[in-house]
Length: 238
Image (cartoon, rainbow, N blue to C red; front, top):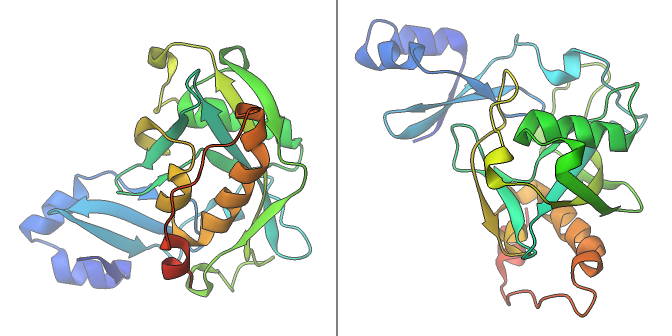
C-alpha cells in the first residue's frame, strides 16, 4: 500500500518501531519526473512515498531554465542496439520504467545536455554512440496538477523536450548506472520499439508516442513495425 505522509507524521507513526529502523537504513531517491519532490523507499514490500516539501529539488538548484509558458527545457534519449531494440531503464527503487532524460541547463545546447545526461544516467560517452537524429520541434507534456509546486517561482507546469536517437556501438558492460551520486536507474533491458509507449507513466505517454513516430523512419527505412492493436491508451487517458 502506497501512502503519502509528511515527515512529521511519518516520524510520529514510525519512530522507534522496527519499520522505522528499517526505513532509516534505506537510501532515498527523488522522483525527478515530478516537480513536488516525492521521495520513494521500498518498505516491507510496498512503496512508501514521502513528501519532502522543504527539500531542495532540481527546480530550485543550479542554472535551471523555465520558459514563459511554465515549461522546463529537457532532453530525452532513445538508445538502440544493432537489432533496433531500445534501452529501457527501471527507476531506482520503483517498478517504473522510462528512457533516460534530463533538464537543459542555462549554458547548454540540447545536444550538449543530451551527452551530459547520457554519461550521468547510463555511463556512456560520445564515442560509445552514433547520433542518428533528433525530433524537429519541442514535444511538451504537462504535469498532473497534484505534482505542480505552486509556491515555486517561476512555476513549472511541465517539460518541453527534444528527443535524440542514438545507436550504441559499445559492449553492454560499458553501461554504468551508478556513475553519478544519485542514480536514475537500477536495472535496464532491451525492448521492442513500441513497448515503451505502453509502459511509461501515463502523462508522458503521448510525448513518447510522438517521438517514436517521428524517429522511426531513421531505424526502419523499409517500413516501421506495426504497433500492437490495443486500447491501452484510451483506457488510461486521464
